[in-house]
Image 1 (tube, rainbow, N blue to C red):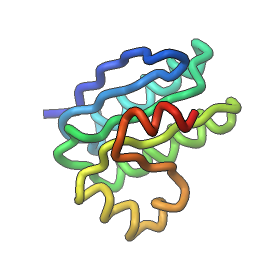
Image 2: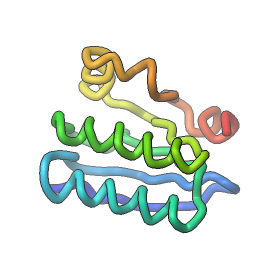
Image 3: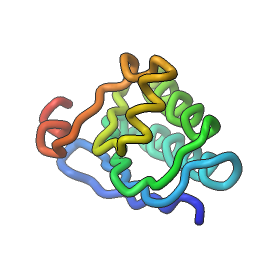
Length: 113
């Protein structure tokens, strides 16, 4: 199963709830396209909820970085919410934990924008 992305708006912040697998192919391109659409529509405060993501590979990590770069270059912020243990470990191994703002609590994440 590839990733399923659900978008919702909470005030000024666009929340993407991801579920499934972010892997090479459909999962990562779906994520990339969704972030680009949102930025092009002027949505520059994006919170990515990864609580239901069962697996992410190196391509998926690359797409997180690509999304972060796309949003940052447009003058916005992309922050992460509800990382699973596996995703936390991957971000620490790749030293990307210092790049992303990461939250466990949605209210705190929303307030940080």
